[in-house]
Length: 448
Image (cartoon, rainbow, N blue to C red; front, top):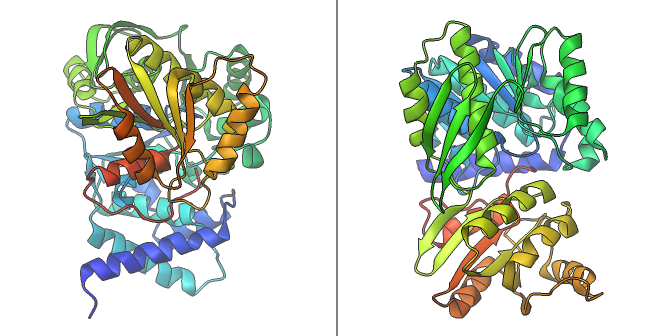
C-alpha cells in the first residue's frame, strides 16, 4: 500500500494534470461541483477580493485581523510559492496533506461519474470551500484567481467585496483595455454588498461606481472615504497612520514596500465595515492583526549573507511599485537583479521598470513550462537599450537555471550589493526552495 507521501504526490499529479483543460472562465462547472459537495460556500460568511495586484497582501491582512478578533478564519489565495498547501489555510495553518488527498479523491470520484471537465482552479476552489465548511470556519477570505465575473470563486455571497486596483494583466482572458478588465473584475460586486477599492485611477473609479450604483452597492474609495500615510519605512517594516470611521496612529506592519500602504488601509476599511455590521472587532485586533501578518514573497529577505531579497512582481504595475520601493530603501546599494518572467506576461513592461535598478542583470527561467527563455528576455533587453536612450546595466548575463543564477549572483555580491530576485511567483518560490524551504517545489502551478 502506498504511503502518504506517495499518495500526496499522486494527488498533486492528478491536480496538475487538470491543467490540460487550460483556463476556462465560467461558473457552470463550479456550480456543479458545489452542488456535489452540498453547497459548502453557504456555510460560512466571506470577504471576496479581486484586483490586479495586492490581493494576497490585503486578504492576509483581513484574515489576520479577524483571527485576532477571536474568529475562525479560512484563507484561500493563489498561486503558492513553494507548497500547494499554502493556498488553503485556516487560522494561518496550511491544509494538511492528508486532507488534500481525501478531498481531492472525493471530488475526483464524483467528477468521474459526470461529463464535467473541470480545470485545476475550479477543483482547488471546490476543495477550499469544502475544507472550510467541514472545519466550521466563521469567515473565509477568498482571493479570485483571475478576473472576477467568471472566476470560480464568484459563487460566493460575500458580506464585503474588494477590488484592490486594476491594471493590465491576463489580457488574453480579460481584455486589452482597463475598461474591459474593470468590467470583468467588477463582476464580483453583489446587490446590496459594500465594495471597497484602493484604485487611484479616476476612470476605473467612475466605472466601478457605476456598477455599484446599478447593484445598490455602497462603494468605499481610498482617499475619499478612507486614507493613510506612511510614517516610517525601512527594509522590513512600515508604520502607517489611518483615517476612516476611526483614526489609528502608527500601526506597524512587518512588510516593506510603499505599495503596502494601500493594501493595509483597504484591509482596515473592510474590518471597519464589518464592525458597522455588528461584528465585534475592537481597535486592539486591528493593531495586533497587522503586527502579526505572515506573508511571503513581498519584499521578503530570504538570506542575510549574501543579502537576497525576493518580490513576486509579475506585471508592469507591480514592477513599478517595486522599483519605487527599492529606489527609496536601497539608494546606497548596488543591485544585482535576477529576473525570471513568464512568456505570456508583458516582458518589456516589467523589464523597463526593474532593469534600471541594477548594475548587473542576470536573466533566467524558473521550472515552469510558461517561463520565458533567457534568450527571449535578452532580446527584450536589447530592444530596450539598443537605441542608447536609456542608461544600460554594466552587465547582462543569461543562465539556464535559477540555481545557476543564484550561484553567479553570489559570486558577484560584495559588501555594497543586494541581490534582488523578481519577475514572477515562480522564480521567487524556486529561490525559497533552493535556500531551504521545507517543501519540494511542484513542477507545475496554476496559471496566474
